[in-house]
Image: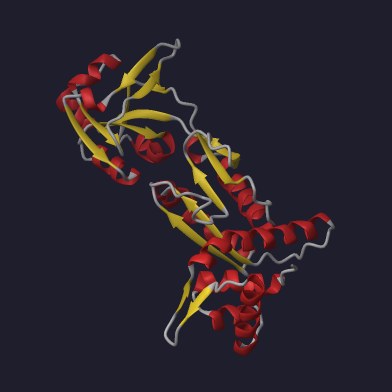
Length: 303
């Protein structure tokens, strides 16, 4: 069974906009043509992809299941034309990108205008949260992860290193003292990110230590990176932070690095990841190249 890729593009756009007429207009189709094209696609598949009422359009269960495959077929077609040198110079469609909110606020949001100026026909759909999304179930094209890449169903491209260090506000250290060794952390208030799980630290000679909020004098658990930094600035305790998240505060002296010879021992890297099954479409490649050039080539936090 052959599938009409124009109909697939229409379905993907309608599923994202929940508006068939608007989706069709974006592809240069009249409303009647859009409705007929979608109906013909559904008939060929034997499934209703979109529920329609007089008031709204919604994605059916079958439509939700079919959506990532429709995106994949479109990406395959784009990649095939690109391989033959027939790729259009205009990148169109919607790119769904998931990233940690804290990082996106500091480094991605400020540079987006430059990317959109280069690709005015592309819609960027950003989902920003410090809670990780499932790429495949969520039908994301690309995501930024600041954790080891262990999922074998995903591919990744390194954006930058992600060093984790201990920090505290000067007035907190003035009141509670400066720890000289990792063992001294048990006498302090520790701020944990998302849970009280211990984190391994490594010293300059390879010695191992632990940042263990559960064993500390006091604990505060926060699930948002920027809020953790602000609590640390306010003097709530000592926290383990990505260097990129506290770069400006360390530079200005509003935060001080604690136990400066120790850092998290995990091999933390900022990865741009995408489902292994997906063809790397022109729009994904363009956004990855942009982020690597703008952020990864010379990370601001390493200067």
